[in-house]
Each structure stands twice: as C-alpha cells, then as structure tokens.
Length: 98
Image (cartoon, rainbow, N blue to C red; front, side, top):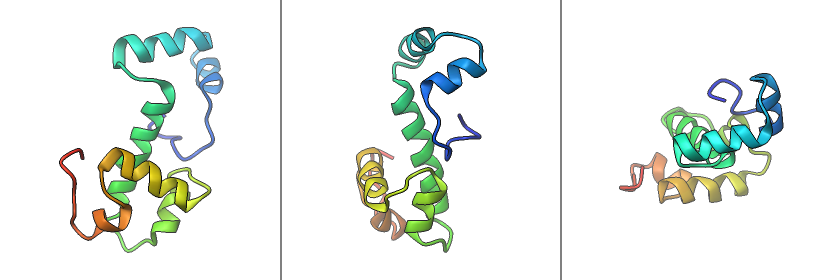
C-alpha cells in the first residue's frame, strides 16, 4: 500500500496479493492497526500529499498523484486528516492534528 497508494486499489486486490481472504485482511487492520483498509489508505495518501505540498506542484496535480480524480474530494479528505485545507497547509497553517 505504501508503494501503490496512488492506484485504485481495493481490499480484494491486496488480499489476493498476500494470499488471504478479504475478511481476514479486514480483521488484521482492525485488530492490529485499530483502523480499516480505507482509513489506512487515506492516511498514507494524505501523508504523501502533505510531503508534496512542500514542492511547487499545483494542488490539483498533487491530488492526482495521490490517487484522487477530483481535487475537491482530495481537499475534503485532506482537511479531515490534517484539519486545514491543502492550500492553508502549504502556507504554513499546520493543524495540531497533523
């Protein structure tokens, strides 16, 4: 997931790649990580996005690079994780949630 985070990966794809069932993989995420597959993937994407916001890339391009087809969906997800919009984050308004 850390390598293919920008792809349209599904829990079934990952389960198949590691030769386990979908339910077993979901159970591991819940028991070991205290999270879900989707939440973990979103956190990886938002961490990478935050790193990219220190570059001159346009926010729209960052959204695409971390796996979002719609920049508005990316901005909403980023704000949910980091507590501020991508542009505010880029301008130094880091939230204590980051």
